[in-house]
Length: 473
Ligand code: 5CA
Ligand code: ZN
Image (cartoon, rainbow, N blue to C red; front, side, top):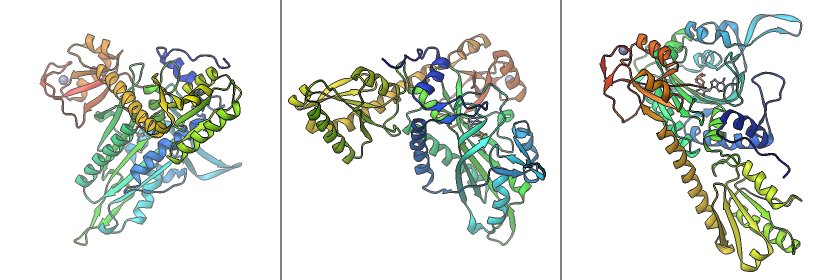
């Protein structure tokens, strides 16, 4: 075997880092901390995942692109926003050896680049709603421990959408629409998550409120894999973005923004992968089917049949490759399992004689399938595989969210996942909770049907409110 085995997933951190390298997702050896290189294979996966996102957004958003650099004069306008980001901004101070008159910020996100232009673009109610998005790199000088795809200093795949509306309620509705879009996106990736309303002290700087999507990683820590923010008129007043309403009066616009980064790929890898490597959902796998010829006699004939099968699958719109390299079949199986290819076809001279192919699913099942039923069987197995990894992920998540009635219980639970505890909702009790449990208050469940009756873990007040708590990446 040419490649050594990756560590067991039980040692999640090691498993994750080794897998990113072995499966050629990203190369972290780039000599700037928090910035890594997409291998071509990783980039192919990224492209498929982001095409899914584009498909969902393109229904009623327009894709656009704004500059990377933001003049200090614009960046410094929104007080709360600056406070949130000022320790994280990289600055361009020179053009060659000449100091710049106005320093330029590398966007940590693009409100302050986009909104001065919105002021120019928006005149009347006829221009609203306005919904745009861009997929770009952003830069944040993160001081917490950086991790590939999870906490980056160059977020290379930052999808940010920005919308403008006439009323606060309409913007609130757009937040719900954004959450629906993200729910559909993560459903297609078979990744379960919870909608959680961030507490006041952890909302997006400059927003009225923030709703996050959190998933639970194999280590029991949570990962925020997307956020939608209601910006109210906060930025509109700062950047003077107004529109003329039906009665001819000028009014401030209401805005939202929502973002997803390559954390979606970190989650995809971490939630589904196993001790043998990646397990990619059919919809985004760069190669969906790998054909491995078993070559010991009749090589020509076997390869020819593999070619014919490949063509048949290509005609059916399936992304398929034949591995006709000189490696032994066992080494090929290992290699393509590591890379998470959903289905493998094995073809040898005996199978050809019998008119069958061996179909192996990435999660273990292996069957012999008549050649003339291959395409339909593949499509059915692809669907079954998707359902099976989705169920598995959902069960994992369900098992790892628990109600806790004491600080001790909560402390124990956050080693596993999310603790749901009584919280009266006051900021003071919230801070106390974080200190006593030694974990983050992610916030209150949003759009959740499960109700809560209990007492605030800190002040003992009877309450219908609860906090979800965890250790976060
Ligand atoms: N302007 C808003 C909406 S686009 C914004 O910047 N929101 S954010 O700060 O919450 O970022 C959006 C998403 O990017 C987060 O939910 C998180 O999933 C991801 N993200 C944030 N920081 C990083 C980072 N350092 N590395 C990777 N992903 C990150
Ligand atoms: Zn309380």
